[in-house]
Image (cartoon, rainbow, N blue to C red; front, side):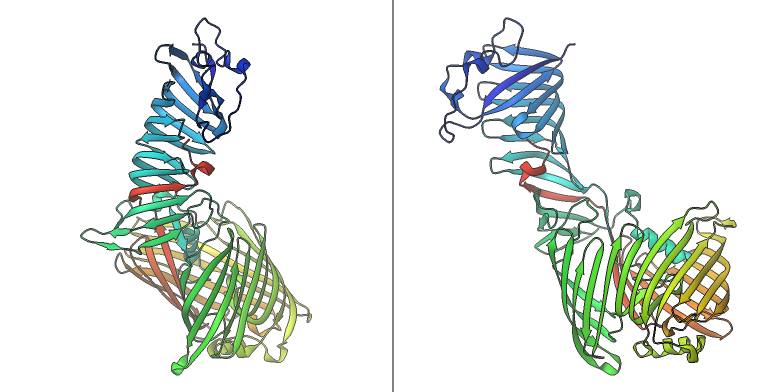
Length: 597
């Protein structure tokens, strides 16, 4: 059936509020461009004084069009479309009806409203063009990062859209992963695999099919004009099987699919060890968004050291998509610490640190007094490795200071190097190459299995003192699952050629070492685990880390104690995908992005 296009001039503002605008008669003669003998409603009313008001244009399209002259009604059938030109909105339905007497539009069947890239669908639609208000029943609205379903939705003249008795479901689940037991966790395949899983973009398969709780709210307000802090929830409650608990009376969060957007709670806790400050820091952190992508954090804190020694300090931090800047002071050891990190692209990062632990590849977290370096990490995919061949290229200027390290760590470093050769400062270039093979064999089922892999990790170093050093390690890895226990046993045979003149980066693992890394799931709520490296030649346990994960499947509190570095870290692994039932959902500044008209 041939598609016909019509243009209808509809009045929406009364001349009381808008200065009269003379409408030219030539426009009104045949606004629908109809090529038949029917007269249009606007042509018949060309002498009406209300035509001297500001106009909004509707373009109606359909496979078939009917016009009732007496009742002044237009009906479009089949692939019906209404373009509200002035508002950049598009209405699609099986049937669209325009009532000229009271100037409103109704739509029926397969309704779809598109505006600003946001789509709303529903069962029935009514639009009063004179007041710019509409009502949509059984709507489903796709916002940026969320989907809303409710019984009905209505707009108001003050640029608001209100949903009643519905459900808000995120477009994709949210994962907050502040470390997997530790910010810079051990280097074994098992730990890396778990850490990658916690940081990966979440999918619906990750969300529990039988959630332990559901969330309701009295009212939710979504501000379309904001990128951050755009969702405010009032009267939220968390419902468990037999009881419910109120959350805060009001809290604000961010719903945004832009990965560069940064946001944080206004007040959050500071708890744990901080670099080489010493002791345990505890206090509040105040977070302020200076832009939609950058956060300024301020934290005054107290310190608790050994023998109940007390101190105080403070931290200032600046965080963005590619920038981190932190500075802290603690009176417990009267020491400053700080770091600056700037990422360039996906692979390269400039880092500078003062009395601050930095990740040093497979050698773990190392602590120099001053470390200024450029690091580039890249990967080459190969068929025999699950994660490819990993390259870590670094160039740095370093100043060592044994006094800032824990005493046991100092002893291991001194025993692994030539103290006569130690230098205070030096330039260093380093290339690390590592890979873990795919399983050579697998045995067992889901709850009881084992797999054998081979791992090699190597480092080539050159120093401005003229020294060179090569570190070569390799050996088997046995990944195991035995009921509730998941763990990895590794053996490394090492070889070191040459010496390092810098105190802080001595190779302490030894020529023969055994590593164990794993977790035991005691209950659904409690998992205990740890990591250790045993130096066979020295007959001593070099590295010891103990960690715990407490909470339901989708909300884990994490703690990790690193005995060698005397570091305690706390974190949260939070996965949220449950829909939120609400009584009212209000979108303000709806003309900016909402799918409604």
